[in-house]
Image 1 (cartoon, helix red, strand yellow):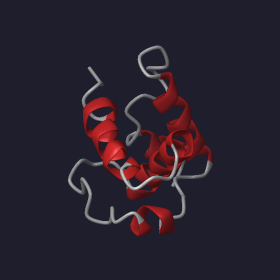
Image 2 (cartoon, one colour):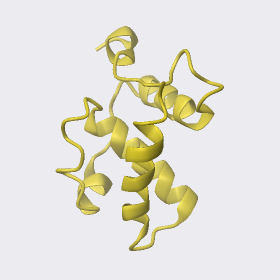
Image 3 (cartoon, one colour):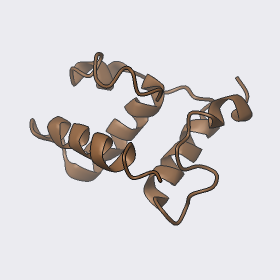
Image 4 (cartoon, one colour):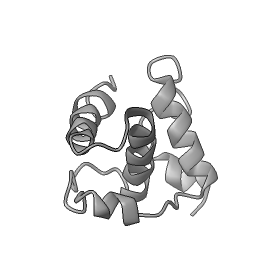
Length: 95
């Protein structure tokens, strides 16, 4: 898939850097990886059925999860915090 095909899944890149610079940066990284990102960590955290109807590819969610875990630590409650961040900040913060 080309970047143009994948960009339709991005909520912030390439137009909304000021509103959410972190999400913009990670979406850009995901595009540079051609939309590919390993899912093993995402599945190990029990997220295979998380937010499946939101239109965001699992590989992008896996990248967001990995960055969230690296920033916040690998603790049991961190996955729940990721879910909260994803649903209230990443999905809902887009105007």
